[in-house]
Length: 133
Image (tube, rainbow, N blue to C red; front, side):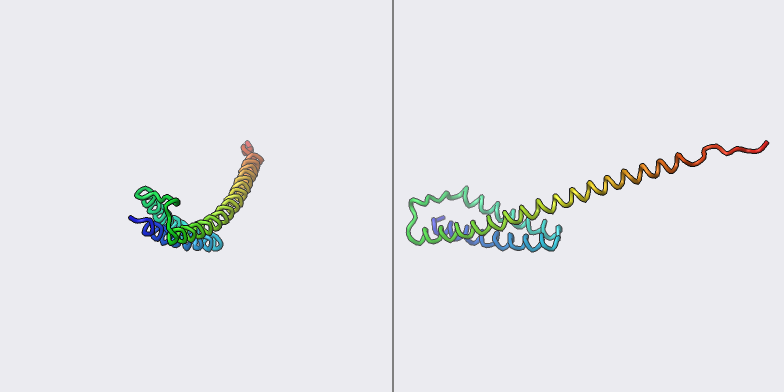
């Protein structure tokens, strides 16, 4: 593969990654975990393809002509956008996980209180019944 072909393919794949990152943001806002997982799997396939391209042909920026430099500049711009969106998505995810952890702790605390109440209520009932002889 030539340098221009490699850069064009990477731009194409990173454009798709960018779109999937935007979709991930939407799914996080909607709290749609199932669709978020589907999108994440699609994104991982694209990332794997990008890694394969990097293995096939490492591109040395020193040998770029003007067209290659422009393509590389465009690629860098797309990558920066992806990184910004992914950073925001990670922060949102961490926040959501923190909220879920608080919720789980509250549920566990409430469950312990209910068990203590039930155990106390049972022990206050009379165990023996006196019968008149």
